[in-house]
Amino acid sequence: MKMDVKSLEHPTLKVPYEILNKKFRSSQKVIDREVNHVSTALTDLEKLYTQDTSDRSAVLQQLDKIKEQLESLRDKGKEGIDDVLETSRVCKRRADHLKDGCREDLPPVMQKQWKKCRLERILVEHFLRSGFFETAVQLSNASGLEDMTNIDVFMAAKEVEESLAAGDISKCLAWCHDNKSKLRKMKSTLEFNVRVQEFIEFIKSGKRMEAVKYARKFLSSEDESQLDQVQQIMGLLAFPVDTPIQPYKDLLDKSRWQSLIHQFRSDNYKLHQLSSQSVLSVSLQAGLSSLKTPHCYKQLNISGLPGYVMDTKCGTEDRNIECPVCHPPLNTLAMALPFSHCSQSRLVCYMSGNPLNENNIPMMLPNGHVYGEQALLKMAGENEGQIVCPRTKMIYPFLDLEKVYVM
Image 1 (tube, rainbow, N blue to C red):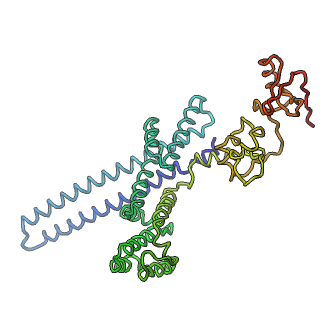
Image 2: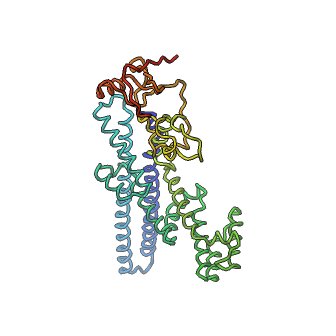
Image 3: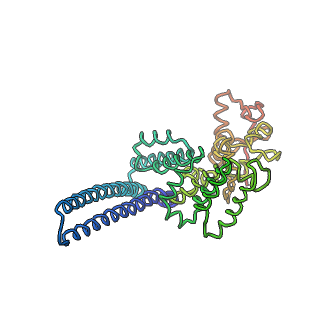
């Protein structure tokens, strides 16, 4: 369990820590700004006192101004501290939760509750990544997981993505401004690409002079890596909006908005130390990969179609009913995953899914199909000593079966 937590739960602590770091720096800037205002006001008050002919009303007015600034400093400082303390409390609760999962002496009942809580957390995150926001919020509220999930991060991202889908860049630019220092460290090109898209929208609207002014203001970058792209988009000024010439045709395509959404989502994940895939997806892939064998894809080699499509041609007789990978939806999901490493072959009864061994001897029907003794005895007891082959539907008496010895 400890290794499981270490390998999969990194974002659980990292996300609130990044938020805490951001809020702390933001609060510090606000307090520094307010302190600077108070210091300036005190300097002005000192100048009034040192004048030969000090104006009593001016001094009182300055004192009132200082009082207001001190009250503002107190209120904003309290607001910032409360915000930081709230995020710190979230970090502590998540750390305690993961610490409980790593305890080896955790009672079975508490261990079961911890696993249930973890599963619900994983489901909430997967729902958020899949766009099922209402379902995620309802599950989080019903399970009391408000502090254990990153709903606020995804809901804020949802607003930005929706605005980009509607052709509005204002919220995305505001997000870029709020996270300017982090994006610069990441060498993100999101803000530049958003500005480029706004320039293209001016071109589409026929406002070419406004486009030139906009480019001079926002696209005059000293970054040499962006120079070629700027030169390319400036070429749009010489072409109509319905031009078939590449690359200008692609620059004018509406699909660029979707590309911006994907880039924003990727940068948002990197900013908050979130992986590109949900924990549920990673866990599912790991489990399927550990169970996947060539037998799960034993089928006719036609068109390279997935197994569940070929079932109509080759039947399901080669599939293990107890194998998750053989299940049609999971069979498709596991196609791109590597096969598990099996140093020893395992024989499994097709009827029951139980392993064939000394306690469940393999028995062969006259038609050559082999099944486990336990499943055959159960079938014989229900059918007056008769065995119906699940694959061929042929009927044989139990006494005609022969034991199979595997060397």
